Image (cartoon, rainbow, N blue to C red; front, side):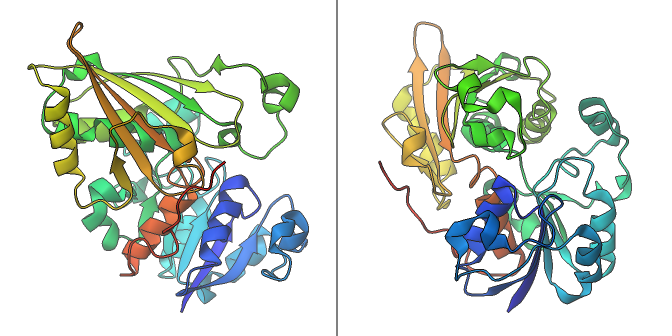
Length: 345
């Protein structure tokens, strides 16, 4: 039985992680840690867990004392908070899956530029594995430290990977227009995400400056074997969950829509959680699931391909992907505890 600890258990991603791990037959939740809700029973914060989870949340100091009791540590904390605890866990032989941004970028200078902090565990960047199973499955299986991808990068990279791997588009032409539900902003109080502030409205934010930009560029560059930059604009839409990424690129040779579907179906033919769909994806068909739906259209008039992908930002964009990574790290069936379809309406 795998023993697991969770830091940041009471945030949206942490709670979603617990929802999956609670039903995992090979795992036991050893401890749940929360900065804002330490010493409070978890089911008092999320009442759906009454009679299912008896854990009382502990503080960070208590979590550090319990590291030797666990096999895997999930970290769902803001950027800059994972450095010390990750080093301590790895020194004890504990596997670490960081759902935050601290180990995603391979350059400490890039991290400082985009996140405004000096990287305090730079020596770990070379060993951290980017946790996107559809691309780095073999590396994930043998890793001790996983940098769980961001939600926007997951949707964008999966949408564009076949095009760049096969050199089908001009790398300088990539535009990503993405929309996210409000839960992507986290559970902390924030005026911008109050109901009356964001309901009945849509807005762009982080224009030309969003922190997921270098993450997207880093992985797409590795796939294309050529450095590239992208234009990435995220938007906030008034729904709880979901990301819809609409990605544009100029085709370098004329290809039909059917030919591109064949390329995508071949590329993802062995990927359980990626569905290539004929109808354009919608967030409602993936909400509550670990699936990524991808649809393709060719604009013959402009010579561009338009790829639309949809994920649940809290699942394939965070907690579900973390569980998928854990399953790979421990040699468990990859879809264990994740084999769930969206519930509608």
